[in-house]
Image (cartoon, rainbow, N blue to C red; front, side, top):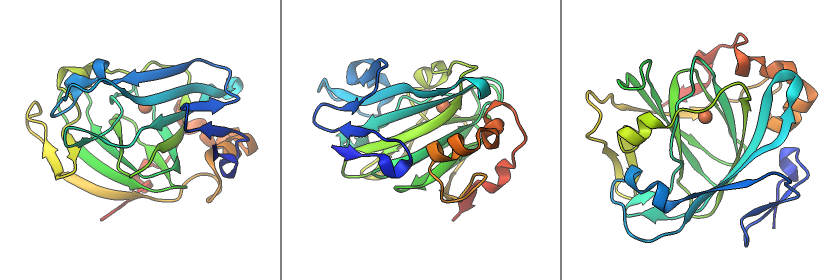
Length: 236
Ligand SMILES: [Fe+2]
């Protein structure tokens, strides 16, 4: 069992059964067969890729949801296991936190869900908090050797948009054991800017769950409140 209490939530993750102990909602599983077209080299091995626990807690008054996601380690072909990838409608941002493992967040900015004009690859380690600015589509890659467990806070007021990633067979780049490879379905394709997350939030060094329970208003930016998104990354 992986104890998540250091992240302010009194829960354990059961790595054997890939279950979040004490979670009462529905676990969603993303399987290889529904994602195979999004990989550079789809192999034929059917398996689960990641598990989503949506609405671990709901902050109804401020219209924010707390989710936990667990990605298996490993590769599909040469490519690291990743989430499907999506954009948000309008200008909804999101905030992630790495609870266990190592994540790469591949962000791509688009106004029309077609042409990408900026790409940021954010490297995050345990305890890091990563803000996804408005208009950036995002894929999470399990770049570690072990399971990746992350949490996120996001508005309850929209549904994610997956079609652009399905249409282009993934993000603008594939993250593989042999480095990053361009996805030829994107043209033009901006270079990758590598970044690390800067400490954020009303109070630094607070886990997301602790922070939102202490001061929900600090997360008003997830529903359109003011926020300086120019300060969320440290570029290399
Ligand atoms: Fe998202």
